Image 1 (tube, rainbow, N blue to C red):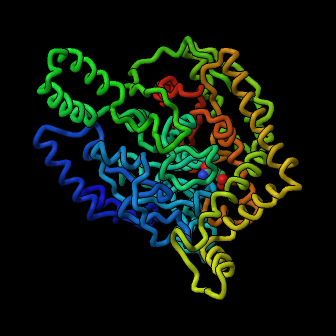
Image 2: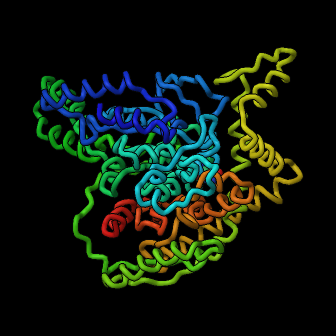
Image 3: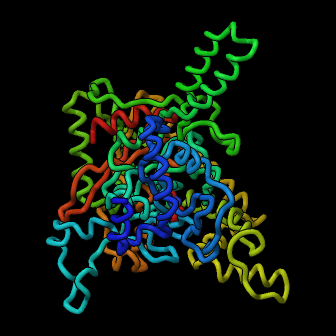
Length: 512
Ligand code: GLN
C-alpha cells in the first residue's frame, strides 16, 4: 500500500503507464496470508516490483508506448514475469519507455517523457539555474535515460524494489546510470526472452533494475521453496507407492532438484530456444571480497569524443580504487569499438523491419478503419500506429535488406559484429577478468536540451559505451558511483565474461 501511495504521489514523473492497483493489492493480501501460515513462496514473496511495458502481462495492458498496441492485452505472461509472480512478487504496474524500446531518453513514447526523479533533488534544484524568467519553474527537469526510463525512475523514486527493463543496446544500463540505480544486463541466453516484445532478437535481453547490487543478484537467482513444495507433493505421492523402498534416493533427488532449479529467473526456457541448457546455480554475493587477484581492463577506445571531463575523472578515480586495493589495472584495446554505432544501426534496423511486420492490423492492437482494400488497411494501420522513429527504422532496415544491398550492408555488419565480439574474446583470453568503462557521456541533460535535433545524434553517441556488450552478448552492469557537480548521478559500467554474472556482481558489490 505504501508503494502504491508513492506511485500516486510521484505520478508527475510519468514512470508508469499502467498501475495495476487492484491486482497488486490482491497479490499482496495473498502474500500476507502465506507469511501468516509460515509458507512464503520465496525471497521475493510480497516484494513490490514493476515491469517495463514491452513485456507481456496477462490481464494487464501491454502497449510498448505505441499507438499500435494501445489497449492490447496479452493472453499470457512473459516467462520472466511469470517466474517473478511464481515467487510471490507483487506487480505494481507497467513502466514507461521509448516506443518499442527505440531510444535512449524515454522521451519518445506516446504517453510522454519520463522525468528523472533526481530533477527534484534539493542539490540539483539549488544548482540548476532557471534558463529564463519566462520559463516555468521546473523546466530544467532532466531525462531519465532510456529506453527503460520508467523502470529506472520507478526504482529510483522508491515506488518499487526491483523492475524489469530490456537491454538491446544499453536500455537498462543507460537509464540506471542517469537515475542512480543498479542496472544489470545479463549474458544473452541466460534469461528467457519469451514474451518480451522483440526489438532486435539477436541482442535483446531482459534487464534487472534494483537499488543495490545484492538485490539484482537476488532477482536474478531467486532461491525459492516453490519447486521444493512441488517436489514434496510428488515425493509424498511416490513414497505411498510401491516404490517407497528406495525412498532415501527420492530425498536426495528432490533436494538436489530444489537446490539447483530453484525457480530462478535465469535458466533454460523451452519457449526460447536461445536460452542455455545449463542449470543456473543461484548464488549469494560475499560480503568481503579480495580484489587483489583481479585484473581490471580499461579499454582505451572508450575514451570517446564528447566524454565529459567529470565522467573521465570518476572513471580514473575508480581505476585507482582498484589499484590501491591491489588489483592489476591494465589498459586494453578493443579496436573495433568505433564501428559499433554504424554496425548496430544496420543490424538493429534490419531486425526491426522484420519484427515490426507482425503489426498489420490483423493480429494485434490497432486496426485502421480504412477498408478500401486489405493493402490500404495495412498501410493506414501502420501509418496511424507507428511514430516517425519506428517508421524510420523500418524504412532503413528494409533498405539494408534489399537484394542489391544485403551483401554490402547486412552481411558486412554481421562480419563487423563478429570482429567486435572477438575483441572481447581476445581481451578476456589475455587474463583480464572485468572491464571497467563509463556508461554515458555525461550526467543526464535537461529534456528541453535533449529533444533538440543535434542532441538526438548525441544520444546515439552515448550508445557507443553500451552497445558493444550487446553485440558480444556479454553481461554488464551499471553501478551508481558518484554525483556530478549538478547533483545528478554518474554510473560506471563493469563488463564481465559470458555467464560469469557471479564474478561480475561480486566485483560490482565490492565497488558499490
Ligand atoms: N538506444 C538504442 C536504440 O535506440 C538501444 C535501445 C535498447 O537497448 N532498447 O536502439
